[in-house]
Length: 124
Image (tube, rainbow, N blue to C red):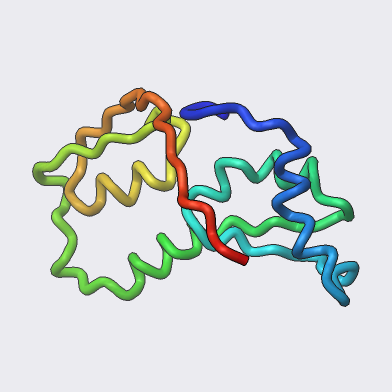
């Protein structure tokens, strides 16, 4: 993975398995990636799925809906603000357009060192 650790493809298969292992799981043909970080691993999800599945990235739709529902008065018209992205702005054209529209004309790419995260074990 680009900004963090690389995980073996088997791990992605293992994490997805409960979706497909339940009764009716064989009928799953579409999964909506409803969290911002899932599109980052979309390729790994596709490669490790036990059956053909379409993965839908909802981020662009959410951005379009946000633009539709925000009143025009919220537009900053490109004045002020900086935005820092973990990927090059040219790789995020849609996001860059929205950020510039709402007052973030200065877009910069920054590298972020991966951080260790842990969670406490849970009781069954």
